[in-house]
Image 1 (cartoon, rainbow, N blue to C red):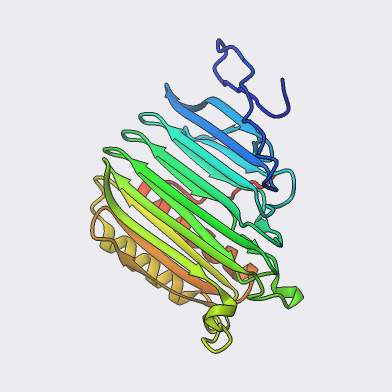
Image 2: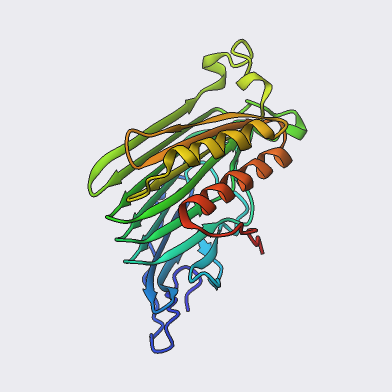
Length: 302
């Protein structure tokens, strides 16, 4: 198979086939165009990866079947980071009753650019009664970097989702906090074609004089966990559990709030990467237990 495009089917009778790669980026623009398309479906008691197409610098590892019937896989960028001019697009579709858990092996590094920004766009489609746990590691913007990223989530009747998004102020250990050029992140959620959530985070450190604004109060990491579910009624109990967990974790500042409908949002800040990852794991564990009635799951990163 071509290294730039690949079709993967987990069904024993499915045939592999080569999928045409994307056209190269225009010669007038630096960077590469990466595309990743994944499709999951339910077969009996298991969720299988029905199709996969990718164009480097996006790639995936082979999925693992979990005991709860879900499929777990890692999204990869083997180049080690995202450069100015890169346009990366990920599209993930879950069929009816499918359940997938998706993460990355490490944080996403955004490198310096002297011209155009890097772009990362994600489109998630969650079918009827399907469940998606989407927990990529956080973004690390390097000095001089510029990022535009978006996530669009479309959900159908009975679907459920746990979605994580996070970033650091830079390579903190090297004293590079808030030295990136700009960071612009958007997220939207639609339930049966109706908008139920929208958020935008835009940070331009020099323009906003982050030192004068205390730069997130001295915290170096920012995370958000969005939980959306149709037909779930125990939102108050979940919110109380989230708030109690955040209050009990040292080095964490945050809170949880209800959305107008079908969900809640948890936002938190951390001083260190260790505290940040611990908080993310704890909040996700609570969401799994209350929303999916599933035990904690330690993400395998290799």
